[in-house]
Length: 587
Image (cartoon, one colour):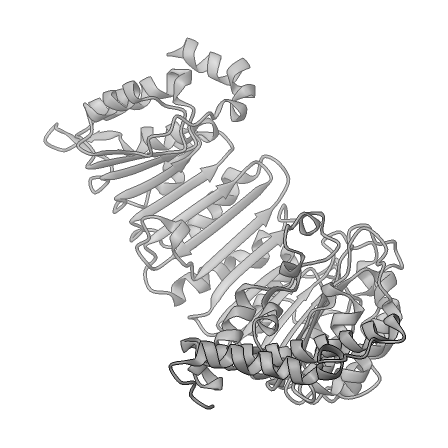
């Protein structure tokens, strides 16, 4: 680039003035010639102005090149554009909120970098991988443009078709695009109705996908699907040539285990209907075991409601196939009929350090299938430090950890198990679980059980937890006050002195309690006054005011309150008319 002298303003003015005079000398000079056809002259002047605009554009390019940001190497600019692409994604044109945008160009998100200056545009267009995430939400024109600008780079196709209304786009064009570019697709995500999938599915069997690493294929309306609404996953998908496939999620499809068996898989997530109208169409546990045996690299395995009902004569000791080992598994999620869960757990061996999340339905008469595994699982772990129960009369969730987790919402559990059963079985189920697991080292406990268990009931559950020091109680109307009665109780020593039943108990966290009803607050205050003071009391999301908090501070060394007088009355309407009145009268 040349350098302009100190008299650049004058010389520039003189130069362009002389250039204009020279250009129009015949018309403006002495004896100038008048144009015979004004319309033709106007056309000629339009061309002159277009040429001047190009010169202006060139001058702006030279000026922009002197801006510090444009002196960065192209590689740095590209990296910035990649970061911008993550946080400033294109918006869906048909979204009503998008239509309100004052600047329509915001719809295209990060692509606006190509409208800033010539250098930015050239840098962006010269990097095909920058255009690899195809934005179908912007419409066919932009989709075609992204396909072209990405050239031969590996691409991401991630498209969520509307769930409850017919897709207004051209499904056939979309299917054609998928088929044409399947050979260079690195990630494929499709969420659609069965009707739309019926038109798109042929594009997935037309050829190999040698670069495909991740596939997420989900039916979007499984609950409303008719008996024959779920499609069958094609056994020849991708022509069975996906040598780099590592991650597969397949939700709400009919399938054979053989059709989704890929030796390279690291992450497998399969989900069926929890209320499947035709569960007998599913393939059994034996075929699942055979498939898993062919996928030795699995690290994440999630199996959710995909097995048929177990045989009526199945027992906890039934042999359904070979016992297989998944040596690299670190996450194992299983959800099904409790008998299927128990049988699967008996046949699948995973590392003791793996995170387990087990959800058992129809738990009324099948605990014998799972509890022996739970007993074995607990023995494989270091001593448990944290225990949590949540649920109501028909559902129980248990989580446990060998980490001392004071606030379990921030922690990570080595296993979680959920039971869904008929009403009235919560207490015996909790008691049976606790009998299978050693609780002598439990130090922190969380309860969000909404079933009104008494202090005597809780003593059969927590009786072994003599090292408890921190407890979180969520919602007293579910019996949380009775946990406090147990934890703050005293016992008479051999010397005749009163001693705490839980001598290490020092911290209580209370969540979602409506203290303004009176009885529970008075009862809690009475319990705290009778026992040696706690070190800390934490109150969150409770209906309580500063005056009541001050009363608690008079009997507890440290009270932490979130300072908000949350309204919990909507959760207590039933109790206000019944159970709470009875308790107040009894007191």
